[in-house]
Length: 73
Image 1 (spheres, helix red, strand yellow):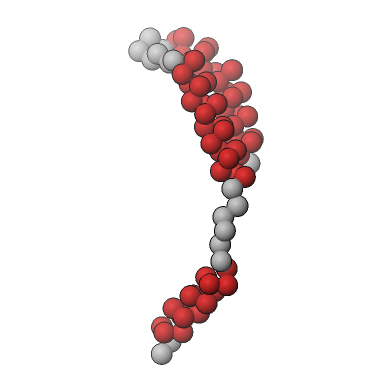
Image 2: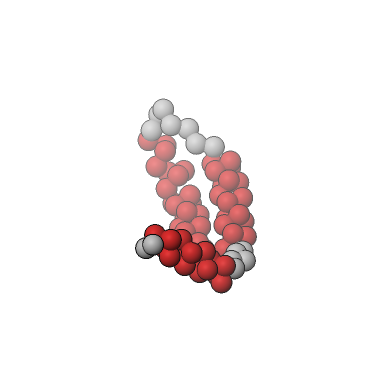
């Protein structure tokens, strides 16, 4: 999903940003900065997608069991 999102944004930059803003006199885009930000975010998203959280599911289940067991007493 993340790869598709970034690809779609890149396509919109290519197709829309430069042409669509030419008709809006009060709107100025820094296309170079926009592309730079997109590249940076693409790298951040890729790194986040590779991250596998270390969750101790046994501890989570035990904690949830303790919480719910006190609610019924």
